[in-house]
Length: 409
View 1 (cartoon, rainbow, N blue to C red):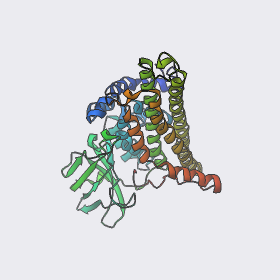
View 2 (spheres, one colour):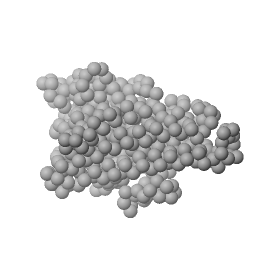
View 3 (cartoon, rainbow, N blue to C red):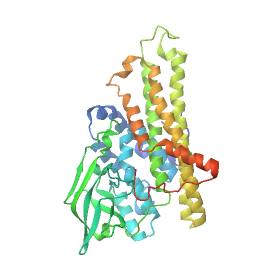
View 4 (tube, rainbow, N blue to C red):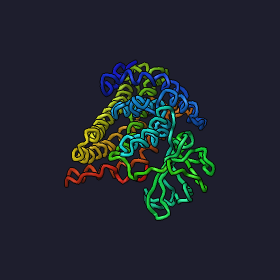
């Protein structure tokens, strides 16, 4: 069934349905086991493997390098669909997708194409930027120091989403001169330990725990020669979270509609012989769908703003790229508080359409709120609303990288 037939509106462009069709069978398998995995804390190893086999690691890689050549709106629409199946998987691939954007924007073309080709063949990169503790986001205690023709990596990372399932970890550190540096290190390298110790009440299966580097040998070819991230990386990472929220909204709306349709018992105060015929219950179900529809539409509109940044880069129009970068960051900032509120509010209102039996763990409805709440906590709406307000009052444009040039908060 197409996205239009499901009532979620058309995708971005005429070819989207064909592109998405490649993955929908996998998404159906992912969604079928999502509640059981959440309940039993079963890591999605098989599901990650299915996505890799289907080409998910090469979504944005150009076709000439073996990838699928998705546009940014096509990518984010597909992420909504994946998140509807299981938002844990979206978080697992988030760092990989961000690194892909950095490589696409890099001036080091030969090196970038080397890694992009690997990604097109199924290679997966996980996150190794954030560190726990009281340090400012983007400051590192992890060190990468020279040792002859190689370097040695020592440190400890947290929020390493995707690293447990990955072939490589994309890390940030400082060198012997306290200069920021970043690179890739194989997850199987001697001295690398990845722990599944993330204890969040939501997104529990994204394995966003600890990675430890103990005197790990890092080849010079694995170190990024040019520091900094692509112009829109901060907005990109925020928008991945918003796509996850929009997908959660869709899954929630569908789950509640299915349960209402099959519900036999009614409240004494009800307005019909069955819940499915009670206009007040139908109103709640309709509000859930409206929230999910609106969230998805907002995500796609913001994705268009990021695409304009990339289009200006490809046209080599630096002035337009800079301007589009600021406006794109603003549009995503404006989207964050609205999408977040839509989905968080819906995940609570959903229970108004159902009886006490909806609290049963076997149904797994609580996971929608838990996942949405944790995702929203990684992307605080209060700061994005402030940014939008600052622009409205004083025309202060946000920085395109949103202080994420060296991190992935």
